[in-house]
Length: 146
Image 1 (cartoon, rainbow, N blue to C red):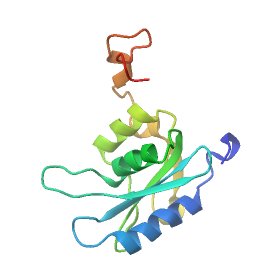
Image 2 (image 1 turned 60 degrees about the vertical axis):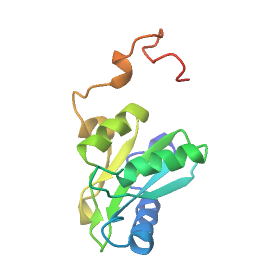
Image 3 (image 1 turned 60 degrees about the horizontal axis):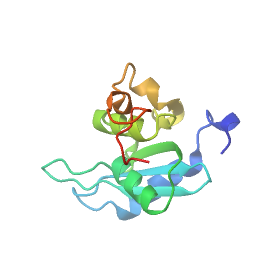
Image 4 (image 1 turned 180 degrees about the horizontal axis):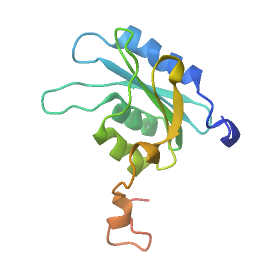
């Protein structure tokens, strides 16, 4: 998907997350699925791992799965609830983590016919930017985080 079509809703991405939610989310431990598109076109999916200690949301699982697959340039992400709940906006923690990893990411939000792909920064205005506050390197990033 090129920059000109960034605002277009990525229905293939929504279908991928919906299929994972339908087929892989079983019970209370896994109730959300997410899918992200990498700049090279690949789609990476994941499910949440609920735990009373605060297990990772599906969006965070996708970040790890993407890294494991060598996909480091995610452009668009969507989360979908199981039991046909549809698109679900990312929680505050996920918004912050996604901003820190992929500040140019677009997130699909909304319901039904009112879905839209918005810049992550629109979901987290005036956000704390972790990299801006790190010491140790010229660009603000900690030493050893190339």
